[in-house]
Amino acid sequence: MEFLPPKIDAYAVSHSQQEPELLQELSRETWLKVLAPRMLSGHFQGRVLSMLSKLIAPRYILEIGTYTGYSALCLAEGMASNGELHTIDNNEELYTLQRKYFDKSGWGAQIIQHTGEALEILPKLKQSFDLVFIDADKINYPNYLEMLLPKLSKGAVILSDNVLWSGKVVAAVAEDDADTKALITYNKLLNTHPRLETVLLPIRDGLTISRVID
Image (cartoon, rainbow, N blue to C red; front, side):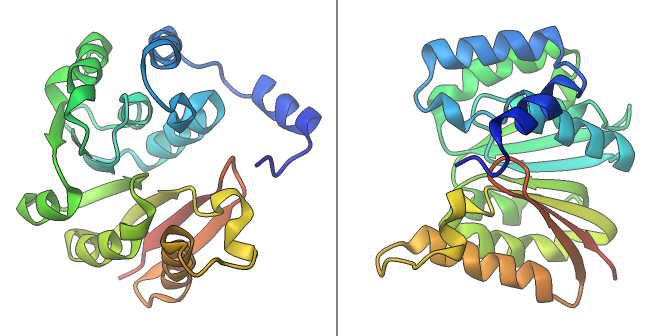
């Protein structure tokens, strides 16, 4: 679902920084070889992620939902020189493709892949993260938030993708639509949680920026 008129959307993209050649290559390979290539963050949102990461300059980044690694590489652009990026995905078939581009990027040694269910992996991570990007199974967004908050210090930032869910969050919700129900709950949690301040941006399918305030 497009939330902006096509001409305005195209104008915004054409007046934003171009994506690096490595990401163009990764995007092409994803569209050629991987199922559901629309899951890719893509040029415009990728530049948004890159800009936010550069402004935050995080040492420790966590990503839930790697897919082919495009968004991880965008986030790595702002990572501190001695930083680490931990990324979690449950699709082991994508591991080799992710690693190929991580190693080509120059950040390969700083990007740690975790394969499996995020709810099982998160308790094992001992770092306190400065920046988190959530782009995984929507039904577990509220669970991820609950598990993440103890790992986040004041000033940490959570980025949450697909929070408008093609407009379903403002439409009548089918009884069996667990993903939309979870996102509605999650969006309310972000907006009312006493430890967070939040702004929801209508970028692509919705991107929320939440900052830990205590």
